[in-house]
Amino acid sequence: MGAALSAAKDHTMIRDTSAQDRLIQVKPSPKKKLLWIGGAVAAVIVLAFFAPAVTRLFSADSSVSASRLAFATVQRGPFVRDIAAEGQVVAAVSPTLYATYGGAVTLKVHAGDTVKKGQVLALIDSPELVNKLAQEQSNADAMEVDYLSAQIAARTNQSQMQKAYDNAKIDEETAARDFDRYEKAYQLGGVPQMDVDKAKDTLNKAKITLAHAQADLNLGNDTGTFNVKAKKLAHDRQVLMVQDLQRQVDNLNVRSPVDGQVGQLFIAERATVAKDAQLVSVIDLSALEVEVKVPESFARDLAVGMGGEISGNGSTWKGIVSAISPEVVNGEVAARVRFDGGTPKQLRQNQRLSVRILLDHRDNVLTVQRGSFVDESGGSYAYVVRDGIATKTPIRAGESSIDKVEILDGLKEGDNIVISGTDNFKGAQRVVISR
Image (tube, rainbow, N blue to C red; front, side):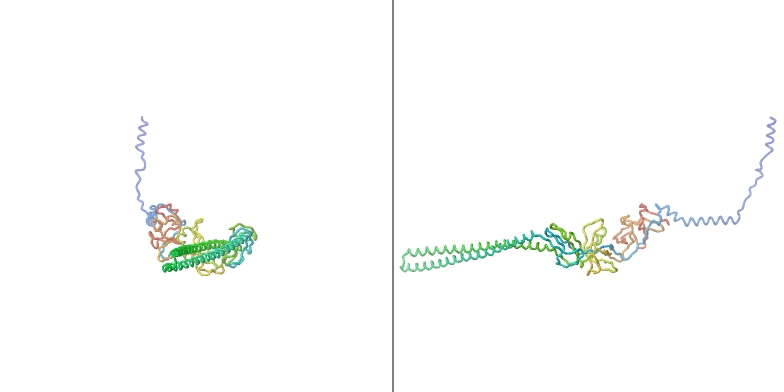
């Protein structure tokens, strides 16, 4: 107990030094104050500088690097729609000759030979056809004899019928005179009534004979005419058959239809072929054209008669579209362009040339460089770039050329748009273009 009181007494007497502490006010130095003020000002300036970018960043849907994009500016000026393609020289006229009849064929030319129109290129040996021609010619000669004989028979029959008619007419006239004489004599009492009646009967008989002779003459003429006509038609038909066989025999000599050059030989120099077998082709080098393959998307705008240019060998010639294939093959349509004027002499079959076909030309048209955005958007929208933000904007695109797209609505001259790489935007409405 005494110990406890002693401890309490000691505790009351011993205290800490907190009562002796004083608050000392520290004044900042002028140098530190200036540094603090400068840092605050710099922070405000940086915040003010980056505030729009930060605002744009948070207002956009995504961000894409500019290195992954391609840009173009909308411009106003001439708009030319054309097709540029590589083509090859082909002959406008390149007939292939066929065997008109089966038989042994002997070629008279070689590939590459220069030939003239009408020159014999091959011979077809066909004894069967030649013999048939001879037989039909003999039949035609026999029919000609029948035809001539029918003419003679008709004239003979006509002569006989005419003779009978003339005799009947004379008999009728004689009977008429006798009857007139007997009738007058009877009135004078010189002859009996019986003689008058007999004369009258004779006259009537003569008239009937004359009428039959006239009918026989007309019928004989018609019969002779029809018989002669039938013989003539038969002969004419046979002559036509002979002429057709003669044409076939003549065609056994296969002749070139044009001046040109022998192209391809489809058979050996001596061979036996069937009818309609390919023999040889001829290339008319005086009428060359250029065949080009046009993408299907442009082919619908092509038309026969459109102008263009053909270039090669350091020269350029005017051309005109002469033919367009109705068939699409591998997404392309074949077209032919002929030279407007004479065919250049230095060209060769299958030579490669450049072709440009003019589809349309207009001035003062709003256009932009063509890019993948047309296919990606279907020409319904484009991303317009302003202050580093690409905004999805509805547009209406018109016609397209190789390098330009016509803008009908939604853009104005001077607008900068993304023409390639918009697939990276994934359809976002606003995209930040980062550097």
